Amino acid sequence: MHDISDIERRGVPGVFVSTVHFASAVEAQAESLGFDAAAVLTRHPIQDRTDNEMAAIADAAFDELVQALVGP
Image (cartoon, rainbow, N blue to C red):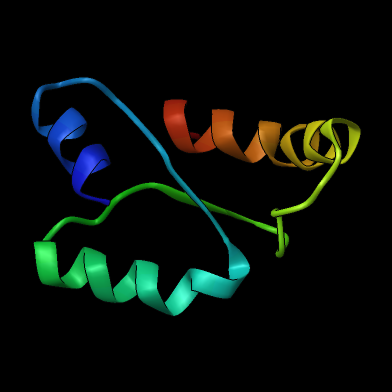
């Protein structure tokens, strides 16, 4: 969250990506930083996934990521 906050403050649009398992932590960190980051949450867990499984997770999140980045 600190990285995306810094990137956004430099004028570079970005999107924070995490798994749904950490949704409450994402909200808490954003609140503590006073930063409302665009965020996309993917399915959990991601560790021990194969390359093909990770590609499928990324593909599933792609449209939401683009929408969060460029807006409606």
